[in-house]
Structures are given as C-alpha cells and as structure tokens.
Length: 406
Picture (cartoon, rainbow, N blue to C red):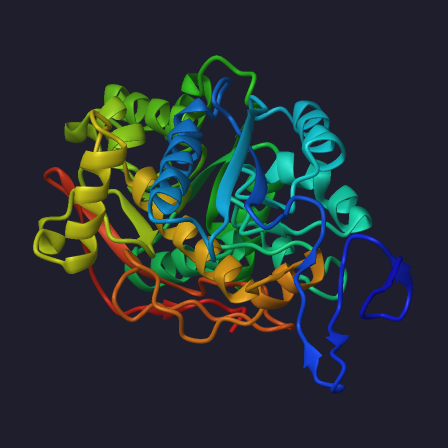
C-alpha cells in the first residue's frame, strides 16, 4: 500500500521516498497502460466505411511508432499502438473505445478520427479521466479545457477555417451567390456555423444550402441543385469520397463556381486525383502542413527526412497523399509529449505535458507555424495559409493567418 501524490491510498502510482539521510528519490509513477518496458496507446480509425480514405492515417501512425521503437522507444519503453476499425460509425467507436480503455487498459487514446465518432466518446473519456489526445477532427469543441479537461485537438478548428473562407469570398468575389454542400453532422455544422459567422450581415449571399448523409451513395443530386440555384461560389464541406464526387459532378454539369474545399479533403491523392486533376483546377483551400506534391519543398530538410522515412517504413505507399504527412506530424507531437512525461506516466501528467508546448517546431508544418498549448489553450495548431490548385499541386498564397483561438 502506498500514498499517492494527492495523499490518498493507491496502488498504481508511486511517489518519492526518503532515504536514511532524508533525501527524496523520485520513483516511477504509472497508470494503466504504462510499465518499465511499455507504453500502450489506443486508437480508432475508419479502415472501412465511407471515410476509409482516412485509413492511411492510422497506417502511417502505426509505421511511425514502429520507427520510434526501432530507435529504442521513448525513454527506454516500447510503444504498443493498438488501433481498431470503427468504420466511421459512432456506435462502433463507443464499443471499440470501451474495449481499449477497460480491457486493453491503454494509457491514452490518440488520434481517434472523426467529429461524430469523437463526439460519441467525448463525455466517456472525460468521466474516465483518460486522455483523448490530438483528435483527428477540427471541431471547435475539442479546445474547451474547463468543460472537458481530458480532450485536446490538433489541427486548426473548422469554425475558424470557415470564417477565413467567408471573409475571402466577401473580399474577392463580386456579387457572390454562394452554394453550400454540407455533411449532415457535427463536423459539417461546425464549418457551417463558422461560415455564417464569417459572412455576418452578408449571410443572405448564401442562395442554396444542401446536406448529405454518409450513407448516401452519391451527392450528384445535391450538386445539380446547387448549380440550378445560380450559385457562382461553392463551399464544399465534405469528406474525400463525397468531395471527389462533387468536384467531378460539377465538371460534368459544366458548373464552374469559385470553389472552396475544406482542408480535411485537400489530399491530392485521396480527393483531387479521384475527382480528376483537370476538374480540380483553381479550387481553394487552407493548409497548415507542407503538401508532398508541392515542388517548393523538394529540398526541404523535413520533407527529405519524411520521404526517406516513407521509403523505409511505408514502401509502396502513395507519397502524394498528404494524410501520411499529417500522420507523421501529429505522431511527432505525441512522441514529444510522452518524452516530456519522463518516468511519470500517469493520466494527469500526460495531459499536463500535452498542455505545455511552447513554440514547438513540428516537422512538416508550414514555415512560421508552431505548436502552442497551455492549461487554458487546447488548440495546438492555430494558423493556416490559403492555397489554390494549379496543375498537379497546391500553390500557397497570402500570409499565414492565425486562428481565433489565439
């Protein structure tokens, strides 16, 4: 029996003990999922279902931890990354996460993907007081430490991204008539609310707003409705499968609006190639990571390191898929967080270190963007830069823009 640091009797965590001379020696502190030899991390990813194109993120993360283990692990401990297929289905996510927390007894959940799926486990993770870290969704609710102290986002939040698009439209498109396609869930609604906030008194410029369900076979009928509305601007709030369909259908119809595509579908390999690169010319998006198809990064040290890593750990994988860049960057952040924990691998300390990054330079983030967190700021990445698609790649333009969370 030991007394933990709060003064309560406990068994899992240990504290400093006094030697005969009265000097304190720090001992190792562990919660579920951590031992002298292992750190167990849980994850859910849509390896199947409507969002299966994101499955490469899980594969990339898995490869990253293999590379970490090949280097000796984290502070001498090997990472055991346990990932499950939830098919982008919230009930399945709940089932998988309960297994990971209660049976596998992971130290934390990392990079669970999807807004509706993370929403389904949000309260559960906080009730269990198990870290839900760097979730793969930009919904603004992941940055609310007062209400949900065990959940933290990673990427720029959707609300802010949508505000940026709205303001760019108002500044650059004369007589804008806006059509919006939106996935009908929390992810889509977060973008939609931000977009309306960005338009402000000009929200009436939205002439048509249509939605789709992830169970729909296509969004062809929705694109026909948007074209028929007379819209000359298109805000495309959809995941890669449906984003590609929308781009292709617009081209088939001869509809050529000013097209804004949400960042989560900006992958050249997952969205634009399936849509047809010839159909994707001129599309606008917001980026915060280097795009692997952008030749300006060919001699960049980060990109060279990533490319060599891909050759070794993901041989045969498509290097044009920005999801692998994303997987590498967010995994680096998780690695640094766990390194900072030292031998204090408790749920409390994992969250404490996650909320204590100042100006951390993460590989493959755009120049000028760093990671900053604090006990009151759970938005690690807070900046983006606009880009348009030309030829076979994204072309950055304008300045780095900071998110409202700053």
